[in-house]
Image: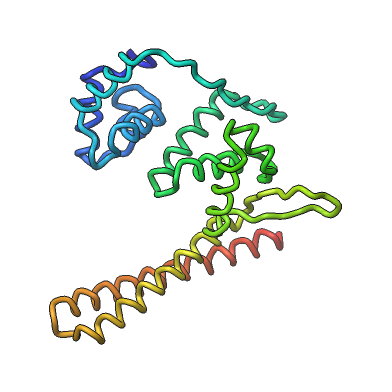
Length: 239
């Protein structure tokens, strides 16, 4: 039933939906389940490319037979002055974290980024993140270093304070796109060098030439998207 545990039939429908190329939201509508439930089920059992209903069902039964362990206390949901549904916010946080993981972020980095995104100020200290995520300071430190390297957050230290804060802003994805363009350009240059070495008329050389052309179009598209976004921000600030 809706809201209860997934059944074998539910998992078979999830597998069928994935095979059709459906998104989590559409599969959830067919099963009368939240998209976040479908996402967690698929992520927990191999991801969209390797999800098998029978294997997922068996894995769930195996987990259910394990001895119960004391689970850590769930992180507190911060007080909200805007009257939001705290549990709906938590459910979205979980599903957004899973989505970031599917996009390639390690889970701890995804949890830190989600936590910052869901904070109205967009800024938290290391101590804040440790408290909210219930993880070690070392875990936060490693995650923050990775996200900073990817241009997905910045550090700041307020005048007269010793502690750093980590924050995101309207340009978080712009910086991330810029890092992607730089990596894309490096791959394009390497592909063109391979063409020179292997020869453009050889099968391997032709493959690299095709890759270089695609990467060129991708870089052009990303650069145009960033210019459009900068123009949008400028127009918004002038109003």
